Amino acid sequence: MVMHLYQLQLQTFKNYFSEQVLFPGKITSLVGNNGAGKTNILDAVHYLSFCKSYFNVVDKDNISHGCDHFSITGKFRSSSEASSDTVLCNVRKNHRKVFKVNGKDIQRLADHIGRIPSVMVSPYDNNLIDGGSDERRRYIDMVISQYDKLYLDDLIAYNRALVQRNLLLKQMAGEIRFDKSLLDPWDEQLTKFGTRISEKRKKFVEEFIPVFTGLYRHLSDDTEESGIQYVSQLGSGITLHQLFEQSVEKDRILKYTTAGIHKDDLQFTLAGVPVKRFGSQGQQKSFIIALKLSQFSFLYRLLNVRPVLLLDDIFDKLDRNRIERLMDLVNNDNYGQIIITDTNAERINTIFGAIKADSDIIHVVDGRVHANGMH
Image (cartoon, rainbow, N blue to C red; front, side, top):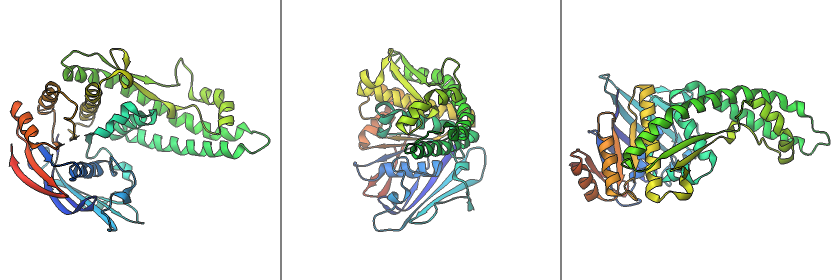
């Protein structure tokens, strides 16, 4: 099944005052100078999928300057149904975020995650390679949460318990006697939720790796061997509860929880060496694109819905061969709607001409959109 966004309405969202964008075909290319607002359109689509921005987690910071609210409305058509779904996100300063589907309020935003799946590929994704382990954990959690509601619930519960345990460790730091038994209730909760989270993360990575390595081989023309390894403190049969027991003295000294699934990480390699240290810019970008396309394939298999693929400024730092292999790949029938941004209309025409694919071109100029037909 394909979820196709065919109309997007923006009101005082970032640099858009009041604008409507239409997406008639499978592939839409947003073309314009840097700062024109191309990426803001992709971010609006991300809002409708995840109830939040991809780039700025503080909702009110996405309101146009001098205004007090923004709204994003998207109309989606399903390939399996004649009807369409209207998704609305409204953010007003000092008010609760309002999210509606077909006019009905979504009381719990977590329940909407996965209804309209999307996959974003952005230059900001370099944080997956260059950033800390929290970036890679967030990536795992974001993918699993789109197809497993219980996972998201467990994650929220684990993080709440972790905050309480850390607060308790800080409170006890100034006391003469350290009473470890006060930590026991939080250790039990962290063990309960953390064990389930860890098992699902391991299962996800095991199933994700072969999809990823196959896609990376395709992008690199079978010239580079890639790898992903799940790194966890839960190894050699040790349980989470045992981990907390062993680290309690260290926790007492440092005043926070030093062990647990909140320390998990992913190790990315090419030819057995870390991508972060030895990968070229082109290799790193190919690695991230392969990650995101694997995410697409993974979600499609589990949800039976092709996510909307959002490709933000992906052609920079990729050679022509990798670009053509990528676009030839996403143009096949396994992929649904694709929205691309680029600064160069001529490059868009050349790329899609080479793979004999059609793309609707929309020019973006200072928060205004101008359709330019199909190329």
